[in-house]
Image (cartoon, rainbow, N blue to C red):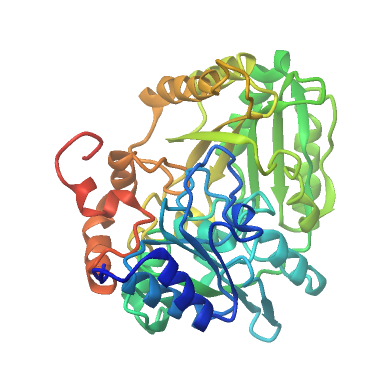
Length: 469
């Protein structure tokens, strides 16, 4: 970072930003400032000194230059959906991309450019009319840039891989103010790092993705009472062991309308009608769901499944473990945790990684775990309370206890998008053989460490000490 002069203050930075940016600049005291830096997780308390709501890439260039000149650490918000709040930095300059939500479809090439603030819902709604779909996560509210930079587990993983596997190129503003294009042909080392290495190398202002001919799928949310969970998960284990690439099955637990925990299965098959009908028959024979059926469904509608689960302002803490695969032992641990759930808003979400996602060579992207596995996401969610003694600790403890119980069965490391900012060892283990190469790319494109979205790749985290490897 450049050292500020004696006259450099947040006030001076605000003046400079307002003199040069096309987008809106907000500072404490301005109407709308408090709302301008809110993120999905209401438990995040960081407060920036100024918010630069960038209108275009040139605004991002100017914001970085002004942040460095005035000694303000920048952070970047795209979708604002990272539970750990890495989009915000106390006393820093928030580069807000939420106004940059364009989607431009190239039908001939079956690709689309999107702005850095585009959310999955924006993207899918723009492409659905053409019978095409991007690879997204499981929730419409999540920003595509952040999802992609860390990986992008989703309901098309078996057939089309992770979100990052469909990334063709990206526009990036680097720490020195240069706006560059990274792709397989241009700045290929940076492009490699962007696909799984997180937002540690610059500000991604636009991304181009391959689109896929996905419109109608065979899918359905099947809900089962807990007393059927052991039998249903036993059948689930058999199904995912032999699942064709076209079928990806998400599973987990959340509470129903009456507050009782339920097991869910969410199969999504984007194969032929014949395969779809076979899948329908398979799942029609699993247990006795209290509601749900596998049917031909528009894929865009499937992505609305969890809209009611993702509510801005609630407090959240997320735990995660990678499992080699489903087993009787881990299934029983999940069922027991669901029975002890502490909030009607909490849930356990199990993402299947297989097929196309597992066939990408390990060296091709910074995302290193290219083998069949499950990602277990333990989401503790609760409404904030002003009552004494209700700090949310019991909900956090519920998530931590399940994580610890899964440890003996877990693979090393974890999914960067869900790991907490202090889980340095697990983050580095998750990058596996790629740590050295990621550090080289970091030094090449951000030698002053202006960006620090992945704390484990920053010097303090790499030194011996608590929380380090």
